[in-house]
Image 1: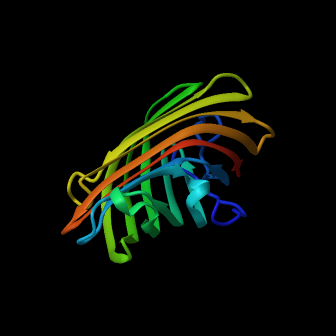
Image 2: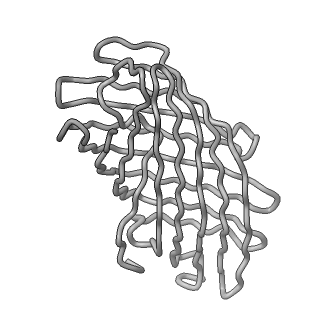
Length: 238
């Protein structure tokens, strides 16, 4: 591990919430969590040959800060997130072996809304629309030659969420979205599945699995990023 990790905090816009009810007032969710995905990269930057890697994020993490939130009233919900990552890794590439490496310093921000299209006493189905903005400073070094790029783009997203209360304490949620469509990236998609346990009236313990993948091309640069792995969270409702 490059550097000890003090903590990383985030909320996916993923339906981490108490059991569905028809609320007359605004309800809010904040959920710090630790996500330990495998981080897969395929970077073709400038004149350098492509550099590929696949490691646990804890092995390549320099620093991170991820935070988001959601507000809900009745059938409507709005949410956003701000994610910052600084990563780097040495990778083998042909005869260059450990002379090749990549570095990423970037921000991902999302803002979206959802509307409940179906709801009963236990379940809720929502349609979602959002914008996700990426701002990435990337570089690859091969045989001591460094090529770098700073890419920024915004993607539209559409998706759906499902939430079900199993009993008074347990609930289940799933979310999926797709986006990009050539507006910013060529394509990106995300899927999440999780289970939650009601610890107190205002706190849930949540565990799940999240996959996020983006494929971007800009000029000579091709950026393929995939984060996939489990997470655990505390969801605070107020």
